[in-house]
Image (spheres, one colour):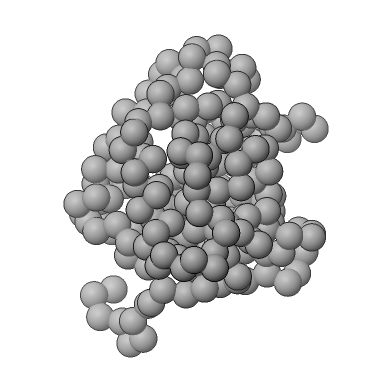
Length: 220
């Protein structure tokens, strides 16, 4: 949509949780997409994640820096081909730090400013039928804000509370290029993706489906 009746603007969804629409311009989206395509190739490429209870995540995932598996981190793809995890590029740390600065505007009252470098990327690919259940990002030692970047199809991002997977929560529409950052009092909030809207990706991006690039600081 080229002309919004009500233009989207930066929104504080909850204390410590900020949505910044259109943070990545079209050129940066294409660059990030090409990087994701390279990272997704084997070895240590895109995989299906299986949970300890026998379930299967409907999104597919590739990791950089540290390999996440339910519920821990390793230096190799312990639940896949066993290959060493791909390295985390320095420019992603710079991107994460700039995202936090832009989201929070240098607010000195915010205590989740990253001190350790960003060194983990979880890249999830969603097709039209993929979902992500409510969960917390709690396997890291650092309390630096989580940085989430969206590419491709629009999704409903459900951002909840720190106590349970149930209400209260807020549903946010994340489009291609949007940034969502959560830290401080919202760092351990439950969140998930109940719905993806297929066919809504920008045509010029050349992506069918949705990619979510999540940056975290391990503190390891």
